[in-house]
Length: 529
Ligand code: HEM
Image 1 (cartoon, rainbow, N blue to C red):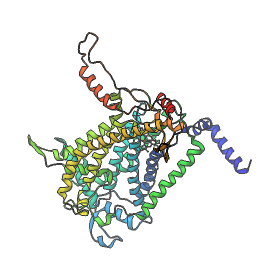
Image 2 (cartoon, rainbow, N blue to C red):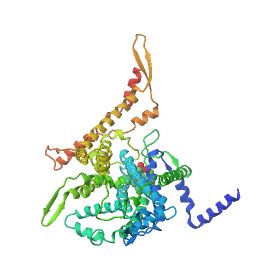
Image 3 (cartoon, rainbow, N blue to C red):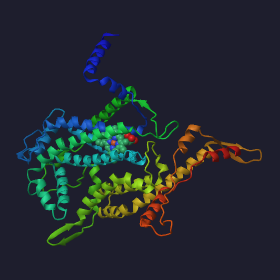
Image 4 (cartoon, rainbow, N blue to C red):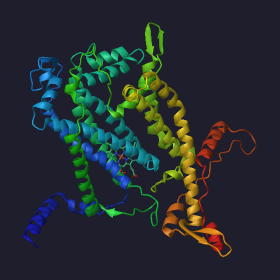
């Protein structure tokens, strides 16, 4: 034993005598996790969150969350002598005078963008593979909470510097608050401590941004990861993988090394972007004054769809009992996002209701084998994408020489027409892929080798696929549709007849599939070859 090993052993023994950690650690470190590249997406969220905490802490040392009026007297000459809030002035100082400050600001901003991309792509992987099914519904709901908080946290973050762009965003938030019937104007006065913009807003959102929300994030992420640990990770179907086992590698040393390396890759990419790619150059926008809006104002991408929905709303207003209800803001700004996030959170329960499948699932679905779910996802994505495109309607119009009206009508029509088309096309593609799988199992792989038979006919040689591959393509189950009774034994309509009829219809649509190749069919064809 070398001296170094002896010292390490002594320290470990000392800690174990006092905490009894060795037994627990031994068990935990050998815990097995399955392997697939898409399982790294959750890790990207985790690592960019850590980068956000570290870079954000650096920024708090110099940022002054105050709306006190000051006259700028710093390094950036074009703004010298301009009146601005202390918050904006301190953000300029971080950018131009604090050593490494601009790099940290840019790393923080890029990390926020990557964090949100990570969350959305991770959510899509969980959705399209059916990883949200029993027993992981709670973790799905926690995830939807994290997504919502991420959007709010990002919005508050880029509102802090009090530049012209961020002030414009806060003004939109005020409009959305005011659109709530009856209590809206009270709520806005409460949030801003009086009339907009007032002097309270930046200090208040600062506390929420650096203390309250990060605290909630930490708590939710901890519970999220504990649940992944406790419920075990799902795995893709394959030989030897069942609903009862986990095939993969141990945490120590394989995943410790992978995770450590991956953290540094995420950190490296973020730092590289922070170093070379300018993001949110607030000095170009100038300080916020409520009377100005700069052309081409854009929110960060994860807010863009919401902005796009508001931009495409027709000017609908109702005046009743001395109140004005601005439907043009209330519907796209609050009601629609409310419905979208509620449906998203409830999706695991809606699906299990529709299919009648209440069992546990630890093996993932290949997206093609759940055509309706995949098509629904494509439909929701298309809706969000059209809204997001409309969030940049002014920039797109000037770039491609279009009018803002053309963009708006594209969005207004597209948001209704394109999602159903996406649904139909995706479902067809899934069913075609199922058919292709069936062909592959029954007739083997096309080799591209043509052979001429003695009587002159040309045929292509097919090679049988490996038994492992055949297993992977056929191991999924194909659910039979529900057949809930509409009449009782005496032939009388049941009280739940209508509900049962609707469920039967939906579950029939959910069960549409190309029958997978069976062992008997395979054997039969083998005889023919
Ligand atoms: C701060 C944001 C988040 C962090 C740090 C995070 C982290 C993670 C990690 C590290 C894993 C295990 C690796 C993996 O499957 O990718 C995981 C799994 C999971 N996450 Fe997240 N996640 C976040 C947001 C979300 C969101 C938005 C959803 C969905 C709405 C979600 C739902 C799930 C589910 C259901 C699992 C279990 C997946 C399985 O076992 O296959 N998470 N998460």
